[in-house]
Image 1 (cartoon, rainbow over the protein chains, first blue to last red):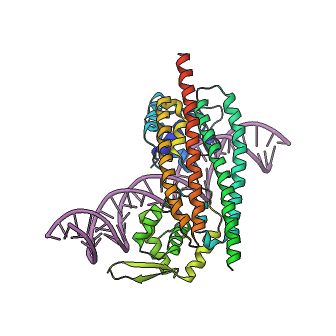
Image 2: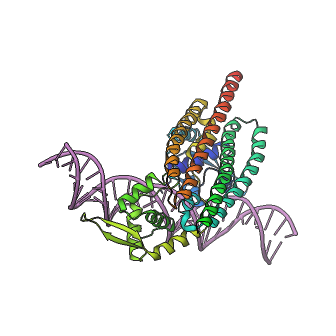
Length: 184
Length: 184
DNA sequence: ACCAGCATGTAAAGTGTTACATGATTGC
DNA sequence: GCAATCATGTAACACTTTACATGCTGGT
């Protein structure tokens, strides 16, 4: 089957917030965890099968035939806590933007400038989206809300850092462009 | 063989800065690109074989038997430019720290606090390391240096954002801990 | 009757890491 | 001679994504 611990953690964690169908879980992961986590479609269903077989989640019938709601069992909560307590695996980064800028000499200043501008726009949109989510989370007085707030704030800091970097980067590229012109 | 475009880009790019052995290339990628890129051992050699077969790099003999220096050919430079011009694939994030904090209620405030403190330490060490690298890059007047500087500055902004976030997060956790105590 | 969206699942292909195997060279 | 490091490569495994296949339900 081969379902990683990381996927099990995300699935158990998602279901620990509220029982739901696999389909809904997938949307939850995409929409709510999307800023810092991804789980592909083809991972979620095998993970649900495996977790159910091990008694960590249970399937509850719905009115609608062919669909079921999954809920975490007490054993599942125990397992989730064990998984969360493991040290986070240090992630291997793959930032396509920075790789391109690193070899930017081959790409040229104009294309680099465009890459930075695109990244800046994305960060701006992200920041706007996050402030809306922040308001929601701050209004929510559930026990999970303070922890969720931590991740929202992390996203905001990261997005603001990207904006500040983009402005610095555009300055560097500007100077680079004029220096190259002058030396020609 | 199955060597992705991304790996080809990193390998061609690395060799475009200076011709070197596969072994040296691996160290370059780990030490220089390590902040934002990773390439495993078992990817680099197959990539070199493939790129040589396609005439994008060439193998030059060294004094030492059994080792060779790889250099990018004109075709290889062309290919590198094509690869760099492709839009960066949007990366699928997997931030184990934020995932754990999101489900932090199951983990408890103390363990969360420790996770944040660890992240803060790592960011501090990173920032110190980057300021040394920054000095090196600023002293270097090669044509690649201004572009490399962009990536160093990106690392600095990201590290400072992590520090600022960690301080915010510790505040939130503090308030959370006292609120929990009071309600018991 | 039909379409859009909900829901579940599998198979194949692609991607990436780890562990292993091998040998050369340099300094002690 | 021996250990550390440089150097190259492969094979097995682990992980992920993508595309496909299937059926239900509610609204028009």
